[in-house]
Image (cartoon, rainbow, N blue to C red; front, top):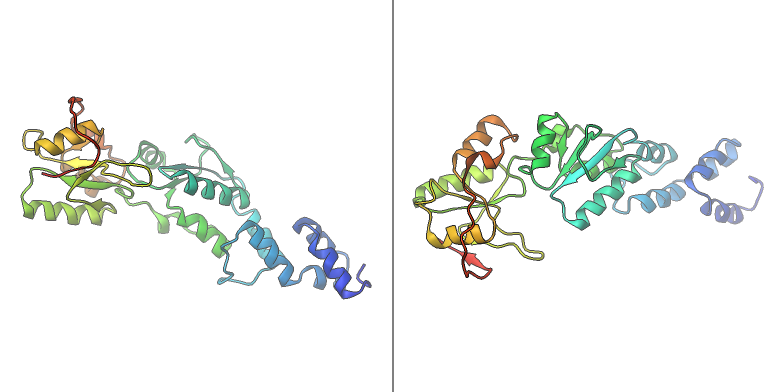
Amino acid sequence: MASLPSDMLAAILERCSPREGARLMRVSWGMRAAAGDAALWRRHCLDLWPEDDFASGPPSPGRYGVRVNLLRGCTLCSTRLDRSRRDSARALVLSLGGEWDDSLTTGTTHLVCGAGYTPKAIRAHRARIPAVTPDWLTACVREAKRPCPAAFRVPPLAGATLTTSGLSPADREAVRRRVVALGGSFDCALRASGPGRPGTTHLLALSARLCGPDKLRAALRWAIPVVHPRWLEALEGGGPCVEPDRFRLLSTWLPTSLSTGTASG
């Protein structure tokens, strides 16, 4: 086969799978050079990892083999990823030799998080299951190794958008800084979520009595938890395994004719 004209040999090798190409490399030194051509393995890599820029190393059979087995023995699941991001994460996990399970179980080895305050994220933290951002999977592909999960730790308020009611401007600014430091976002208005539009996830207030009535009714109408700022203190002092429900002020539904939109106060 190595004696074939180079253009014919190249055409045959282009039709070989990565496994077949790797086997052909064992036939002879000539086949090793032909079947190990970087252009061939670049195509194989891009078939599985289209966004690979090869910045950390050129395409090669060895690099390809490392990556397709990188997550072998690992089972990953996700929390608070939209369908597109979840499908992308799942495809990357499978391309790296891992398994995917939509449920968090005792067999889960990593949790891919779009938010750090969800029940899944809290359970993972308590079970000492690494919770990582989707960038961890991208780094696995780019570096052809498993990066340290701690470098991709999910902040406690990642994915959360908080607002306040009944606080002075100075206290509200202090809360804003604390929320941002914990990885969250702050918005002065309370907003309902909608298709492609994430809304407020939590309303912070010292008490229901001190809440602005419009914000309070809107929060209850839109099922947005109303929690005490002590939740932030617990996150700052105790890590991400602190459920917001422990600091919830209200769970009562108040009938209202409010329409979706925003509420201030």
